[in-house]
Length: 120
Image (cartoon, rainbow, N blue to C red; front, side, top):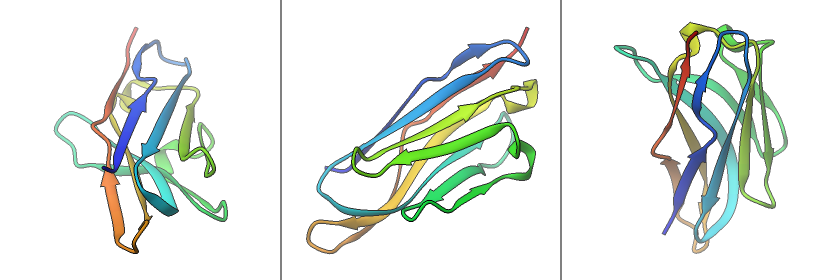
């Protein structure tokens, strides 16, 4: 069964840093992309950052220069290093992965989310 599990969220002061991790498990043949999205209170879920299998990255405008996404395809892991955090970064952060299962079925799956709160 395909599963995505996020970790690393918590409470941090403005200007601080956090590192989120996402572990993907299951009968996976290949992963095309992994990404992080977030949903703040009363807001829609938006892209934070994504990385493709060859290593091409995309960032949301509000996090460029502050957040860094990385992945380890062999370990089926993705990471989000978040620096210079602001109160507006407060949200539930969701991991997303898309790829192909053993047997050929395509997948596009989400984790349960990890909460990040930036507050003094």
